[in-house]
Length: 415
Image (cartoon, rainbow, N blue to C red; front, top):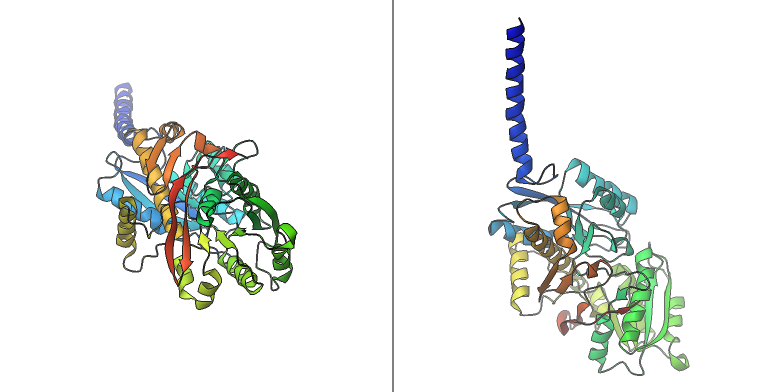
């Protein structure tokens, strides 16, 4: 009886050893216990604002990331691992929905990292930081900056006071106007955290380039544009020296309805200055005659080299997007931010090495430097608290987008 018990114990131990060896082998292939990593794959998912009450959408970033990951997979992946991209969740520009989407990706889908993340009111930041899950995307809000787990593909765009902020936008507008001396700027925001915070960074960008400030406002409600624009327009039109209109109107509002409404009202009031924003570089606007009229002459400010450029990096991006999305692929601002976010992730994962764990990835990403003519440059840890300082200008003219100022990088300034 004793011998039989010993034999059964030995047999069970042998089975356990075999199973343990298999499990250890699987874990070792992607780092011990690393979620989303196997010997031949890395699981990735994203969170975007695909729908919103204002009409604002970053949904195109999903195609951008997919296009870059598809090419990486066709070239053999990262250290032999293919990217398993499960797509993006929609946060509806609602923090609670974004937090739920983040938990789903991490706890249910078991993703290794979130790429891309592009949501003005993203609600999953604290959870990702607590869980030490890396996330990469368009860092448009202060919730990105200074976190160990967060990596903006073009840096932190909402730094804290005392840290460094971008000057490229102001300098590019100054170049377009032939100089900033004697010219003034009005900055318009909505009553949202990200938009209001952008007032401080944009003010620094334009004053660093030599502009004077005519004024700023975050009085517009964030959820829907007003029925009557006249109170806002009247204030802007009298904000410059001597009660004149400013030379430049900068919009930091997220939502095409806001911008087209404001610009139309300004033009009717006789505004002749330069209008610029971060979101109007969007082929969707070309489908609607009223929107084209509202945005005609507006200078959008993308943080990458425009699609209309003929440099090799942009040609490659366009080819990848068209291959992934077919003939109807929409080449918009968000497709590019998703694409370049995926590019940065791939370079970081490559640096992390074959034994990929989140700890190894974080270590590689925290001391990471990369340059690409498509979006400029990125360097961590500096980019944890500062922009990469690069951007371009694109003008909508005659129903088509044209490069006004090619991508260029400028030194940051203290906020």
